[in-house]
Structures are given as structure tokens and as C-alpha cells.
Length: 75
Image 1 (cartoon, rainbow, N blue to C red):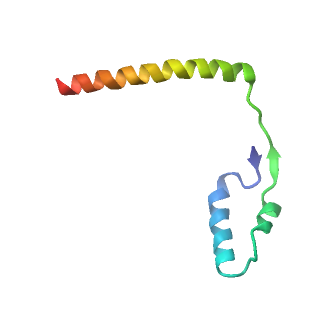
Image 2: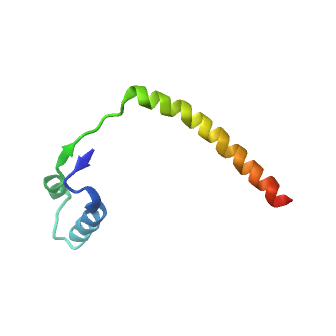
């Protein structure tokens, strides 16, 4: 999901907490007015299935390399 807030979400959250904490806002409902959904992306199911298979290989390779690195370090 891409929204109008995008990269400024953390700053908006900090500002909202400050305004609420100072009593200037009664709740966080104004966030909904500022946060507008611009687009929604959905995963490609075919690619997602491929990525799941590749992730298994990646994890196996990562574990192997980690163990290999430990053996080299031990000498």
C-alpha cells in the first residue's frame, strides 16, 4: 500500500502522539484525514511461489556458509 504519508509516517506518528499527549487532540481520528491510500499492490502469485522455493535454498545456503565460516574461524 502506498499512501500520501509514505516516507513521513514516523514523523506524522510522533507529531500525533505529541498533539494527543499535550491535549490538543482528543483522539487520533485526524490521522485518517491525512493518511490517504494512493495505491494498493498485490503480489504476483506465480512469482510468490517461486520466491518461496528460492527462500528454502537461500536459508540452506546461509546455514551452510555460517557453519563453514565458523570452521574457518576456529582454524
